[in-house]
Image 1: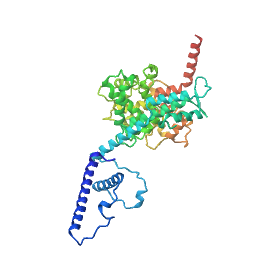
Image 2 (image 1 turned 135 degrees about the vertical axis):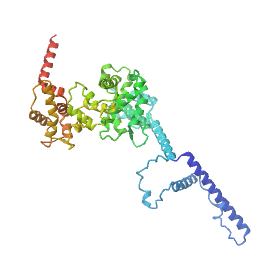
Image 3 (image 1 turned 90 degrees about the vertical axis):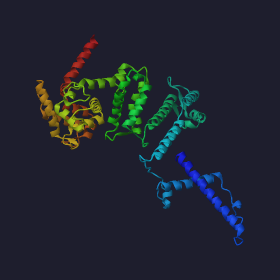
Image 4 (image 1 turned 90 degrees about the horizontal axis):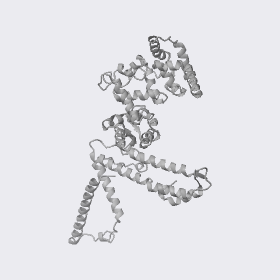
Length: 468
């Protein structure tokens, strides 16, 4: 698609060229009348006898000439090989920063394409009509309160529903929910694509920030947030997407991955005005959760400089993480003058609060892999557990033998190599959260070590509660 201004410019040049050609023909005819020696034109050669080209042929000719001149003007290479006509084009170069015209053209093309795709989706009126047709053609008997439809009636609905509805006995509600879900996915994809500046199917961090910022006013559950907090809320929300969907830290996420995960559903769930407070407490994107995380950050920041030092971070949670582990956090994570900003803190929180997830285990595994070998060996395990033993002595607890702990870890993980634990071994074992907790947090290790006593305690308390 070529910009209107450029197209018109070349149309003017083309018309001028035709005018010059007409003038040349006239001069030739005039010369023929004067010079008796000039040959007489046959009927086929005479301009007035030539077959006039159709409007479509003229347009095609004009487009061919325009494409030719435009390519030459842009320094395009002429492809003389016949195979180029049959091989589909698979690479499209992005416009350079100085090619303003091409950038504008690309933006306009994408906007028109997305608008066309949006018009192809069912609107609310068409969805209501589909529900009416499904309800009208239901096939008895009902199963409980659920209406059913057989294939014959389904085809009748297909006939009457129109071109947009191109879709034994199935549940009407399940089918309608499927249609609603599909329409929602396409609408959301189009909405996200509007923020896809590069037009290559992914969102950068700034793109997703803009999307969520403009989404906030449409979410009733966020009405109570002060506008001054919007930037912190957006940062909190965006970090979850990038922490879990961009494990290689490329700085961009596929739109397809955003749609495939549940994060966007959780975010848009905040449109529900009747969402309970208990439910909101467990949702990362809710206002109470965002305020809790940011409040913890402010409480840890004792010198109020907006950053966290190692000493300040050591008070996180139960304040029982080992110094060895905290040293590794500040060695491996992005810091500024040995202090951590809010964005890096969010990654830290997401990792510790979701230790069962592969992305969180990858984060912690990188910290535990002190030799950068891609696996944990006996030396690595001993290096971190010694810090746990030191904390146990400080708190007056009897130290536990490393050999016993090492054997328990190997029994839990059941790794392929008897002396090496890889990240995949941790993930496959479903014990990664327990193993990492044992090595980095005294409180976590104590909970694991006394798990049987704690379970017995819980059982006794439950029995006492039942008796009352």
